Image (tube, rainbow, N blue to C red; front, side):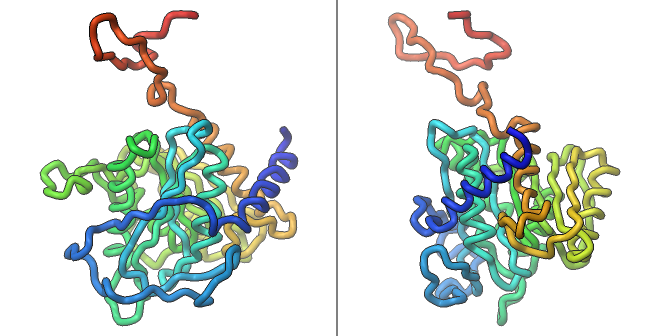
Length: 324
């Protein structure tokens, strides 16, 4: 299939998905238990704009005090074992929940990728002192830990968990790319014992206020994309982050389109090249093997040994299965 045909196929798939996002089955998990020390304003209600969105209508969410992930799993027959934490944007004032969250999750599901849409605390919440590098980053790290704690139940490979961040959510993707750990083995909370390191990251028209950057050794590969001169602020920061990755010898793919403006998530954009950025992401993920099941993760059932109930699972590359 050529690039143009693939683009049209993806647009058709998106057109089918978009009106149905409100009916998509999902499960919602709180990042923290009630009464957790990090939580504030737990009794306050979120603010939706417009306040009563109809199915398929765009809306924003503000006043987030109870961060969650909303998890969307692909059909089992299509599952690859890959999961992406999706971080919507909104300038840390609000979250563009449908177009940079739920619809992205549906698109990922169509390619066999599980998705956990992150509702994180917003630094620009009036009356609260939330910060991007404080509570918002903490929520992002916690999302990774929670996903890995549930990975077995969801059919997710803990070594194939990445993040895709849009605009302000891209800042969180960059932060967790740089600031993560392999888990806290002495933590009393079992969730905190899980790793918050992303295996790969995607930054889509990402931008941030001044903050310190230091790419750690062994950081996962990255995909970066933005429009160009008509979104110069985000394009410039995207290129600067790419240069940091390049200097640190972290594999990264960069796409700066001639024009297209800011925002828009996956949309046709009147047929301009920037409307195909998600196809480039799909190609990049396929190139890294994330759109195919890991054969060492999805092992076929082993024959039951005579006289016992136990079976041994071993990596195929160490002990190949005999030919049929």
